[in-house]
Length: 116
Length: 114
Image (cartoon, each protein chain N blue to C red):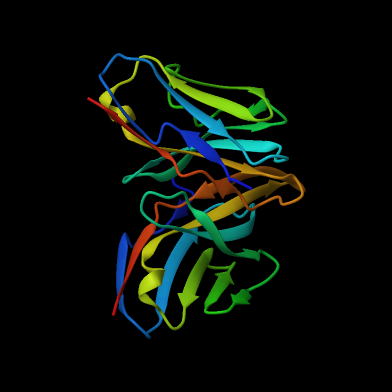
């Protein structure tokens, strides 16, 4: 049962344009969401996060939006740069009864390619 | 800080052989996680430790998989016997309890079982 889903395996964008990566989740007990970025032959690195009490978090060119009613989050990259080409994973933290389980559930990843 | 260290970076073995993957977490981190990455399922959590104690091993696929953390600076993931479907990239990650969500990943071990 895939509780965190990234339905687009890949996305191709022109340099300077906006990249929008999407993520859906099924468990309403997730209380914190993160995006990780992964280059080939490297481990994922943390990019940006958002608490479930917020609907938007911005960090430079990166903005994450959370729609709790739709159980959907998205990552916007504006403007996109060739160096942003990587695999992007969304992840969710489970909190049940006020206790964080301390583990993340990841989606399958979306390969972003930004063309010069 | 050197970050999370994993070894070997690449492993090629034959079906039936024992495989041992190693991880050194970031010093001071008290949580350690083992993940497996495949194209079909993305990043799957296999097991995680808190203060060297296994907390949740529900993601370990079969009894052929085992993990240990004998001390705060070392963990192993063992597959015995290995099978071709175990071929994947295995990541180790660690985090500090005060930073409850962000995990720091190692570079991964790419395993190929022939």
